[in-house]
Image (cartoon, rainbow, N blue to C red; front, side, top):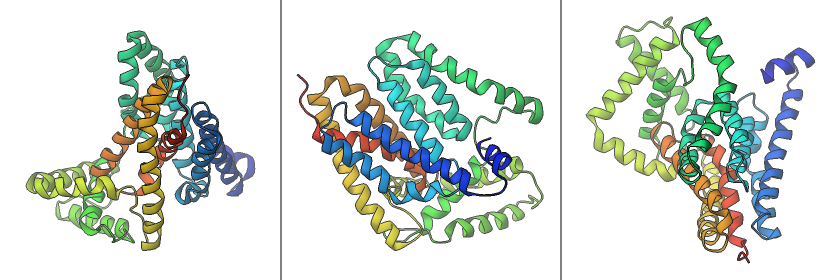
Length: 322
């Protein structure tokens, strides 16, 4: 809808939606700054915001017609709504629904919602889930009416898992992805043809067959799959297409995660009012890292939690709460 609106108003020109995404990226940096300033010193908050402003992959995707930039902004707003004092569950629920319209990985945000539900009670769960359902409802009804399925989850889950296994097998701690995505797609086409799946088959049929191939390999090689997934817990934070980019992201994210670890400890000890932020942020960082270590390792897929980690990193300069 966002891209369609741009085309309707400005034609095929790319600059309008690119400008809109630049504004979304700038807003993300601003919200990180304002939120971090609540519990961190000015320098720490500025450093967290600056990291988001100069992050090379966050900048890269503002120029591409993809979901990353808008999704990252919605994730930051979602975290702010959940951890406000007092929490704003209705706003968080509406944002959750909007995220799900962009990417089905929003479903894993349940891990960040559950601790607050346990703390504040069942009414909080209703206050979060109901607005999300209302946002999703028109699109679910339309999809069921048009396609016979709600389409709440990715139609390429099996293909993505196959690609992830292929890429995991061909990269290393220092070997980038390069053109492995293209190679994985070509290899998948060959594997599907061997199974009698036509190149003209629909996405649902191809995805189901790809998922079956991937799961069969995991079942036949459980120890190898586990080894790759454990390695990917770190690798996914700096795996990119080129050696130089891998080095840049390794240094950048090593500093970020180290500062976030220190900030987590200090916020928990010095700022009891920020403990909701710690729980939500750590939950999101953990689930995104674990999910994409299994499904498909790459820096691109952990982008939504980079600003969240920056919020924790600002906590390294947290003052003791009076």
